Length: 117
Image 1 (cartoon, rainbow, N blue to C red):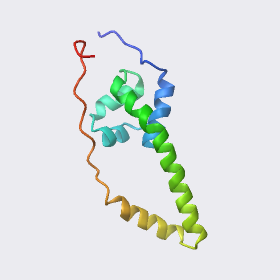
Image 2 (cartoon, rainbow, N blue to C red):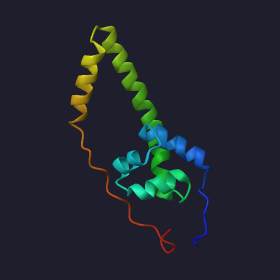
Image 3 (tube, rainbow, N blue to C red):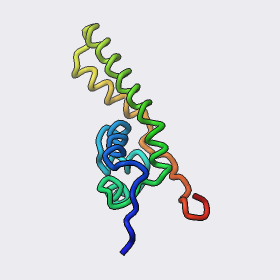
């Protein structure tokens, strides 16, 4: 049996970072965002395995940017609603626009081991 290692930060804090970046602490969201295996994502979220330092660094970097993105989108939607654009039309156009964005996850970082950590 492998020795269980602790994350560098409390699991609840890491889960909150995942929510800020991905919108929800769901394995599928990490899979889609990072291209990691679903099993790895499940292990990280459950605390069964530790988050790799590179993942934590990405989450730390992206969390404030994603917060700002949501704020900007809310402001933009409010602005168009105030101009009289119906919500269902906004939803349809935003969904349409989202299809112009790539759904390919970024390349995986090289694995870290004890020799190059």
